[in-house]
Length: 248
Image (cartoon, rainbow, N blue to C red; front, side):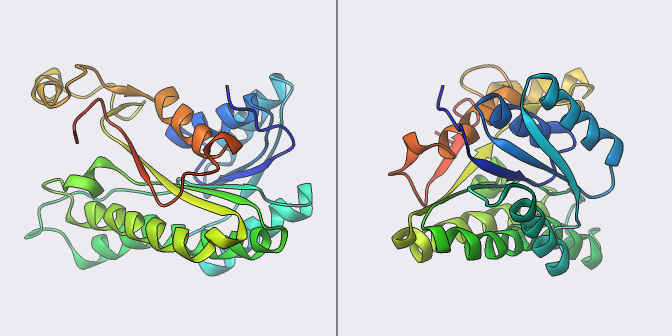
């Protein structure tokens, strides 16, 4: 288990789902965690309390990271609270799926802003601090939809593909300052939002996965924690797919 002792991590969209799982995993490995949320204060505080029950350190911070003010305030809160930021996990995002002929322009814009713009804004804010101490780990959550596309998700697939391009470009910009930038691309993940999908839909998806099962939240969190660790110091600009072989 790669240790993150004495590291300070910011996880956006950490009040539930994959973000929550990542926050818990980083805390278990010794990181102090800023649990970012936009609207779900109660669930974010539950994550903080769970981390503290494990003898970890965490603070919930409200910020709409799709706005410049929100992203800047979040990173400032981390530095003000813990004195630095070592790790940024860009996880916040949303979906508004529909076929292109029916999808409204505002639904396209909303997904790009929530997923791609937030990643750029938070990275920009964090890099300022990381460059001064010549150390940092940025891990962006993309998706298999950004790698291979998905019908009915032109907005979401575009946002996640954009995150891949952002990851590779930023890795080249900041590598000389000791900062690595990588992405994790989950495939089908078992969460509270997906566990109640109709069985016929699940049956259609399963043959696409060579390993024959969906990823767990923990599978994604383990991959993120590795890329956030010093063991991954020579890995940057990469996309790690955690999809059971779908993209192989």
